[in-house]
Length: 206
Image (cartoon, rainbow, N blue to C red; front, side, top):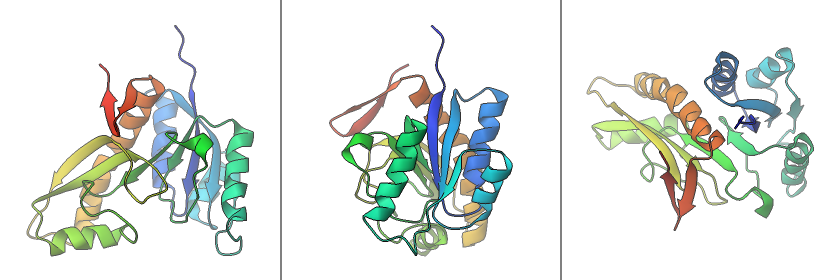
């Protein structure tokens, strides 16, 4: 049976590296999906790239759009694009996920959840905390998103060693090498319908 591409809505706030990675996987045929909408919380390189790539891109400025209108505007763009799955790709603003999108939002976190997650734990804050605690391994986690920070079921995790000589920058670079593998892998599992959530735990069918 022919698989229909998974229609993705990508939310971002920064450089757009995750969006570029996803689009490259789509273009090479290893990810059965298409980017149906891109929504940026502020002007950024990721939004510029999406516009240059002729994607359906929107700016919903977080600082000048108050809740709940901010969340409602994002939801309206996703609905209009007929999105199947929402991908948080370095999205640093708060979108209140409506019931219709429960189980349809995924994120990648630059640590091995449930460690080093929660409010304020993003970007270099995470890597600084990992180094401060003397961890010997770190990595990344693709997980479903709920309205509680970093609490959703885990889809894919990949690990990296933490070196005695690491700085937040060198650790971040090593973790990102795994992020560009983990996110497309998780999205393809979802595109193939191989994921089910049982008692709050994501199960992967062969």
